[in-house]
Image (cartoon, rainbow, N blue to C red):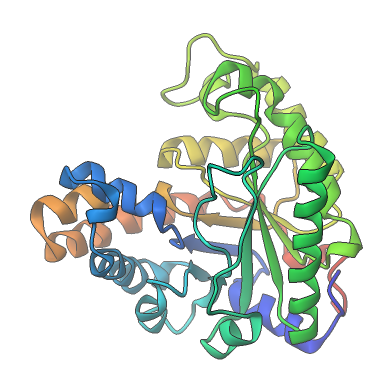
Length: 336
């Protein structure tokens, strides 16, 4: 693997993957995004949503969904109680970055949590450490140089601690709004450029977490898709193949807030493309609709919804992982 091969990194990857070496993980490290979901349902400003509500929601998700997952991704700000309630079979990834970015500073620059280090995350029980990075190759060289140096520093810290480093890349553009046809046309290039860049050994990344290389809303035949699609189905499959061809590391797909049905469709395309992905770190596509249930009917109703619909959502995704390949099959993962 890219970060100083050691038994700790191998052990960490085994802890978060299933018997096949595939990562089938639930992601609920969201903080501002989760707060915004509660804000909309409660009819209050995001800052008025109590942190205890976020923690309670994460606990319920962890307790009920992790028996059906290989791991869970949480944050140390609101997620540590949830980490303690995960199933014995489920590994733990912890986020290291602050949520969101300073909108007054150009470039969506990342920042780390003030009171945490990789060593502290490991002491809190993390098998792996994750950071999120907004990345666009078209950003200025100054902005991207700062981001690359940031990733290098975290990679070195994870290598020193011998713990796997997961890098989540979120594609964006300064010139096109997300979820528009204009952005859909350039998204494949942005995703591929980010995957190619951060596959380089200098960053010591072990696993990449990326969005689908196409915007599913604009793919021909997508559930609830736009009738004015940007990509024909075969063209979408070719974009999956192009991105996979530049990945020198194991990579996982994230759900980017799409519906469970749309996420399944994306995994179907990835499988048809033989993209060689190593699993998922899937968040809102599994638990998002439970927010309104908790707000309207309480925590017991949320538990019931998760046990019924949430588990079904996870199982739907798990069934779409037949085309996934072991994280240990990558030549970048040493000792396997």
